[in-house]
Length: 175
Image 1 (cartoon, rainbow, N blue to C red):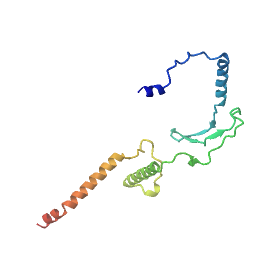
Image 2 (image 1 turned 30 degrees about the vertical axis):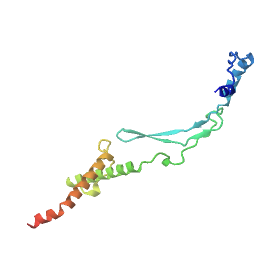
Image 3 (image 1 turned 45 degrees about the vertical axis):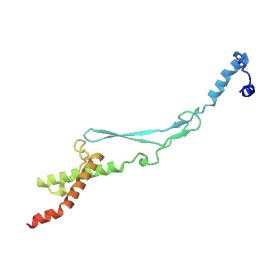
Image 4 (image 1 turned 60 degrees about the horizontal axis):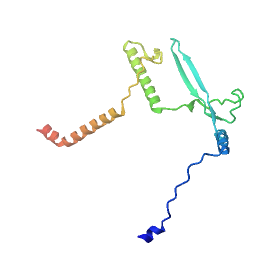
């Protein structure tokens, strides 16, 4: 055991802490300034074109089309010197084909209902003037995914029951 203990180095206390020299303290703020100068900033620019549409009955609608985001190479340049890119096409906005399809179907449905009502009143179809339905009449009929799934399961269970009881119903029908 003593041989093992003899291999260890004796314990020496570490020296007490010393304050930094004045040169190190003076150099620290300049290093911070250098680090601040080295941070890079990137500048970007975009424009949004807002179109206001007023209908004959005084309703106002607004539509906004953003232009592509452009990186500004030099932040010191003024905004007038920078060339503003126009949007390449009106299709640059996010498209939602499902909602568009539902709106079109809803409009066609409302027009068909309107035409049927006019025919019942005795007005021929050729005399019908078509107008876009007002904002109160256009209400989209959408159901949630949860409800769609519920209806699908209901239909599935009904078909399963019909398949299971088919022979019994045939026998009862013969008797």
